[in-house]
Length: 107
Image (cartoon, rainbow, N blue to C red):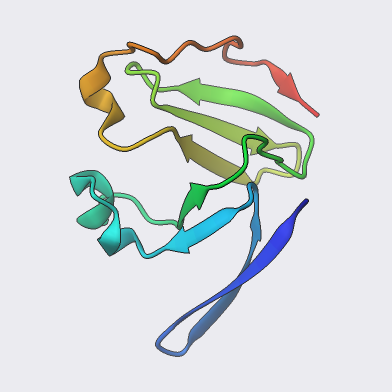
């Protein structure tokens, strides 16, 4: 099920289509310094489901070396980076197995 979440910061109002069912959390509240310090921009969703939907035909364009982030780009050029877990870089790939490679098509 795709849900729409409305986020409002100051005078900026945006609609985000949620890729997974879960609770939206402010980046500053994530117990991972890369997120809390806003080293990256985006939203955080603590999932309560195990299925993630990306509503566009896409290709996997990057997998980070620590296997904690993968990036998808839609045929229209929209991009999303999916980070798996909190402080997952420290795991050094333990417990993180990718079943796809760069260039894999996602439909």
